[in-house]
Structures are given as structure tokens and as C-alpha cells.
Picture 1 (cartoon, one colour):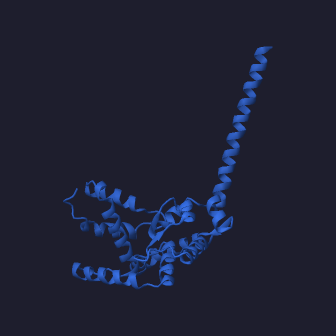
Picture 2 (cartoon, helix red, strand yellow):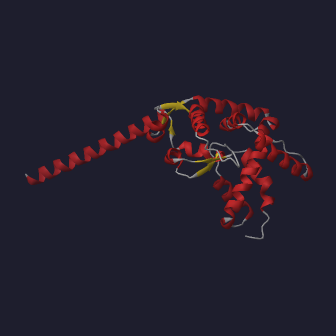
Picture 3 (cartoon, helix red, strand yellow):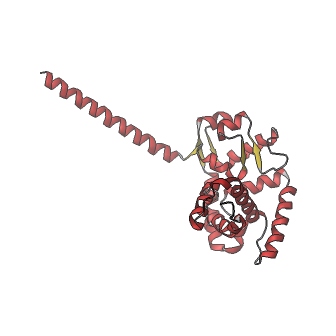
Length: 235
């Protein structure tokens, strides 16, 4: 679909981002929805679409959208400059704000919706979670809140100068981070998606253990019954 002007997807992408949980939505999810809604094949333009999604995400987080296209173009230029001017601390705070699941645009357009999201987000990021063995070994802890995990990762990233100097939104993974994210380079927009695989709720693990133990018990019972049947047949 080389003749498709992907800039026409901007309103749809922003709508998807505003109405989605940033902890769950991925660039691939958005691209698949665009393909479905517009009946197009974007396979050969994944990189372009990825960049457009990241741009829309930054626009929503940092700048305010305007009502007409002329003002919107101006906002995009201002937002791009704002990103480059952010200090490390400011950028870290912006990323942590993303974890709350509340964008600045959402705050200004729907107070009721904002209240619900904020309550859910704050509860989630401060709740202790069980770390995967890989993440636990790296952070030297078995349980941490999502927010604390992010803080420690950012501290490590800064200490080892792993932010791309040309674009601080990107993180260049060293061997330790590669073990966690399984990527050579990641965008902060997708970092939380990869962390999800390493953070589990205690109750979920308990349920999994109970289910596993139950299955083991059934298998043992079946094996025992089979053994009894064989003994009975021998007799």
C-alpha cells in the first residue's frame, strides 16, 4: 500500500490511544486495527506506522491538540521541540505518569473518566508484585511495586548512559536489559508491555499453584487407579 498517505491515520490513532490502557495497548494492536478499519495492508510500512504512533503518543502526552489542521500542525512542531528540551528527570516523571493510565488530554476532556483511571492506576502501580526470576536477580528483590521497578530500571539506565543520545525516548539495551526485554533497543512506550511478563500478582500465582496441584493430584489418582486395575487383572 505504497500509495496510502499514512498521515490520514492520525485522528484514528489518537482516538485509539486516548481510549486505551497504555499498559496494554501495543503498536502492533494499533496497526492491526488500522488495517481492519481502513481495509489496507500495512505490512510493508510497519516502521513508518510505528513512528507515526509514537508521534501521536507524544502529542497527546506533551502538547494540547487544536481544533483545526493548521493549529494542529503548529502543535506538532512545538511538541517535537518540547521532547528534546526535557531533562532526564522530567522525562522520567512523564514516563511514570504514563503508567498511571491517564494522559493529559484525557484529564482535560473528561473529569469523570479521569477520576476512574487515576484511582485504578495508582492502586496498580503501588501494589507489590512478584518479580520473575530474571528480574528478581537483576533488581535483588522478590517483590516490588510496578512503580518501584520502573524507578530502579531508570536509575540503572541513567547510571549506565543507556538512553539514545539522539532520542532519549529510546533505550539501548545492554546485556542485563536484553535478558529482561529480549530486545536490543526499545522505546519507553513499549517498556511497560515487556515488564508485564515479569510482574505477577500474588493471588494469580496462588491460583496457578492450586490449579497445578489439583492437576497433579488427578494424575496421581489416575495412575493409582490404573495400577490397581492392573493388579486386579493379574489376579
